[in-house]
Length: 369
Image (cartoon, rainbow, N blue to C red; front, side, top):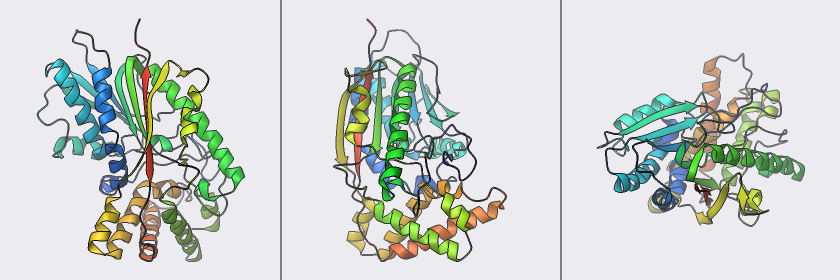
């Protein structure tokens, strides 16, 4: 999962590009919630691998992982799909796996995970060939009619751009109705673009499985407490002159959790969108393993540290994009560390579960006639 943008806007202006997840293994270490959410969709991915049409020839079967970040959360999905495909075609047929993310993503960590992780899908496989593509998924990434099975977990919550300034916060859902409306409009445009590009890249009968943090009955997501406390910490960093007032005013994260009606809107007229149809759409609560550990151990400091690490891994790099580009790289690292430390200190007093939900949607491309 990484923030996705194909724009090159000036720092601080509406449209500011978001950053990839924190690299050097940090995201992999702090991404338990996205991992748990993605796990809920593995049976759907396995079913998709069973339902695609496969010719009798020897052409490589193609899997695409849209928004891979550092790769650890992609291992189980790719392994599950490959296992089903091997049962269908045997072990001689080549399988290509494309992991895609933004150009600045830490692909080196991804390759290290593929090489050394005990859960790597390359173990005991001689004919699986991974590669990466550094490009936003809000544009074409792979050739037309090329992908058999596509997977995207959590990544499409990130928009291509921040459409407007978020006053007094950095999270649109904690701002005014006008700001939320602009983000909803951008989210609708981006979702249609994402679907149209994937529809072009899928082969006939191909499947796309998407997992997204979701809105349910207009309730705020379960990580709102974390976002609110981070917002307080940012104000403290301004007071401590670690961040300037101008930099703080420019900060925002380009995320928007969609409702079910928003996800299904492109299909509302006749059930089709660019040749795609909806096979499945459902909502699930996401297990919060960090909270379960807290309930067991009653250790608020560890809970707070893990919550702060999660925030830094996923959201803090986007906030750092608003820092003056002439700052020394060490100042960026100091900002990230100060934000993480301050948030960890505050979250000790807020030991609450992250009652998050995900929505899974499976899309099929019309088969060949």
